[in-house]
Length: 308
Image 1 (tube, rainbow, N blue to C red):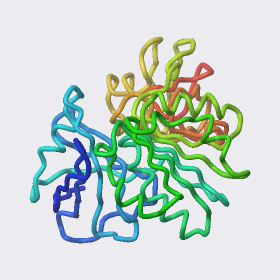
Image 2: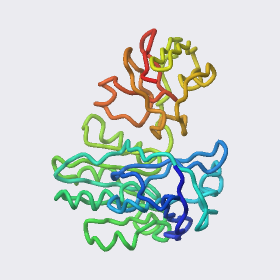
Image 3: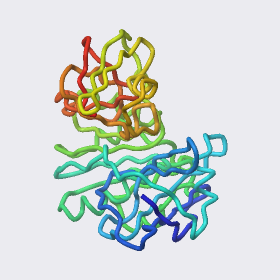
Image 4: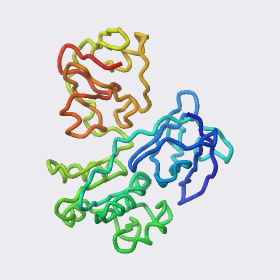
């Protein structure tokens, strides 16, 4: 799908917000809080960014991107965009949905505020209570900080140079009974929240990189039948399903991160038991065995049948 940059706005030190509109002037696909899109920024340069605007404005998408000078080039390309530039986009997709709850505790670290920003209004419209714990290196680096502060005491801004880092133990201890916790930010913050929430079933996270141990597990060979394409491939140890399919040809699977964090390669499972190694699916989705991320996940048995 084609989009055009309409506006580029600095929203913090090193962070720009970019407004995208459809290149034909029409409405964009609908989305819900937690959704992200793939920006096709160049040959072999695809990056995922959370939508952080208003889902009720179908003619405009907003993303906010932190400049990472030592990264893979995606953020530098976004920061170089100017009004009128055309950007091909895939999506939106949502692996970080806001599930119904009487109360929410939102935890954001740095640019992790982007998927959470639209969740605040959605929670309010649903009549749920919510609090936001938002940390960053300094106040000037925290995107949308002034806007969020207008919500009053429900928003707890915690610049590290003023108040120290976010405290997962204190945040979880203060969470109301029945609250769901949504966290996005650096790996260290998410790992700490995950460790302290183990087994509670209340924590939902979105990662920018694969979780520790996400690719661990015994690698044995297995067969993958692509039912719709009529192709069967052998997946050797150490080779992903996605790589095996691409090498064999005849099957097209959209992919992006190749680390099991973006959800682009989600594929339906018709038979067999996936060995899930992604950080996208929740426990219920994994238990259903109805879908998998073929860029990292494997098979627990000798054969998988996929709906591709």
